[in-house]
Length: 336
Image 1 (cartoon, one colour):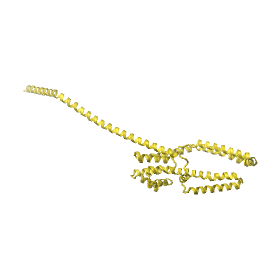
Image 2 (cartoon, helix red, strand yellow):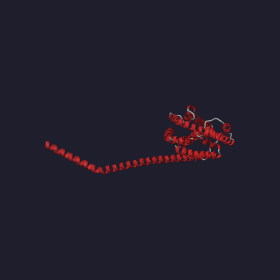
Image 3 (tube, one colour):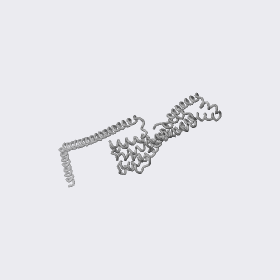
Image 4 (cartoon, helix red, strand yellow):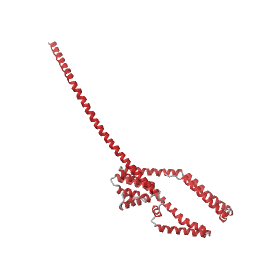
């Protein structure tokens, strides 16, 4: 009985195995066909996805190239305008007075210059009694000294502006990140900033009220503050207005660049102090030697002031001293 059961079970197992093998043999072709079709469908879908991705990538590249071309065109236009400005002659005295931060009219400035030159020439004429020397001093005092003073005030105001300008840019960055538009950020500096940055941003607001847009108003700032840093700021605003982008990041990067330029200037100044001290000593040495010789032998030096040949010698010496000082000044001054 037990043997019969094992035989029956073996026959049933063989029949089931044969049936499964027959079914697999019949259905194998169909299963393989379905697998191949599914594989082809997956490939087609992946190809469509790749085409979509490639199209998106091409669109992004096309947009980036258009934006890059727009930025390049903007830079070319700004560079052309800047070259036109720099190719012009020296600014008029009215502009120079505004750059110096003086609220004096041109007529009043010329009156003060002539009065100053006349006073200096009068004092020289009393001391020397020579009208030709007094006339030369009058021309130098009326035309040279006031203009030198104006240039000095312009440079001093530019230094003060550069000290405060990066801080004003940081305030603009924080204002823009907090949600304020650029117009309100500029107005905030015009109201709460430090001089002379405050006055220049007030001029930008006033130019907007007259109908100019922000890039044009910022571009006019360089007429009053003739500094390359101001030109950088105007270029950043103009490019952002034409090409778009993250304005707060651009202004923040500009603030970092200005601070790095200031550090570099300080390093160059520190490294060139030895050369400047040597130049000052060399430039003052002839005057010191002449004073010491005059203290020991006055009659030996007075011939330079009494004899016409001494006047010629002093004039030639002054010319050569001026050339030497100019050469040394160019050797120790660096543009950054």
